[in-house]
Length: 285
Image (cartoon, rainbow, N blue to C red; front, side, top):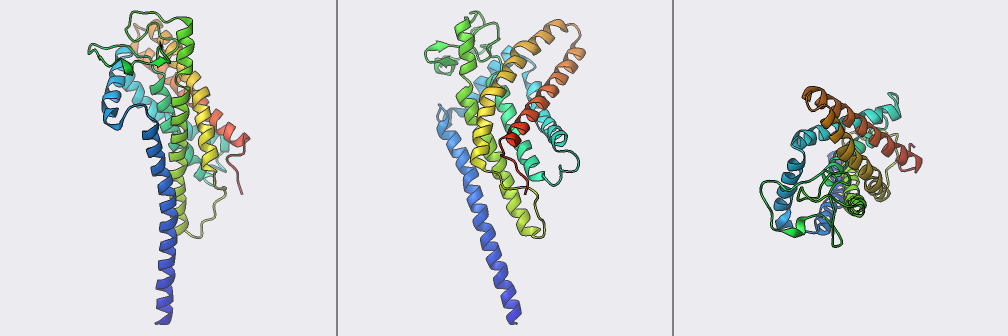
């Protein structure tokens, strides 16, 4: 009877410790979303309108944007997983699964955020009177993509100064998105690790815990510079060129763009993983 009571008491203590750990990690993750909402320039009640406006403008500039969006999300997960396998090898992909899961979650959020932010835009058939939603660097109007032929009105050609401005404009939002993406990715992974430690106490991880703050700052910087340039060139130069050259062969055009996006995703993932390993953000025990 005494032994049974001791077992029950020990189980209660383990559950309490588990709940404390989960609450700490959960607070971090929820805090990330709160910080994201506070950092946005528009109030929460305007998010729906802002997203709808942005989506319509991107579709007006590129009718294939919805398909490319779906493709990008799928490729973000696939190419990141492939890059993790290539970088770590079959012998370490399982033992370093903590890093892999965090990387995939971060990649999905981060890559699509980069794609969305620097996609070309154009005023659609529905006009919006809210000039505050027009991209500006200070008081200067800029295109969302440095290489798109016209400004939002679809008539005015951007100057060299405006094109440079469009390269600078996404830096802060992409840094913010990168911090949030990494915080969420590694935060969710931390929750999974806590759960695994509780349900499978005999499992010994081969990886060290990642410093979420440093990883988030690194991802933010990576997206602000590397992802910014990659997606600016991809969506402003390469894809329009392919679409123009293969306009009469849509199947070949779609296949080639798909292949280019796969290569772009792999390149980004390999660079991101290599950077984290070089900086010592991902270490084994």
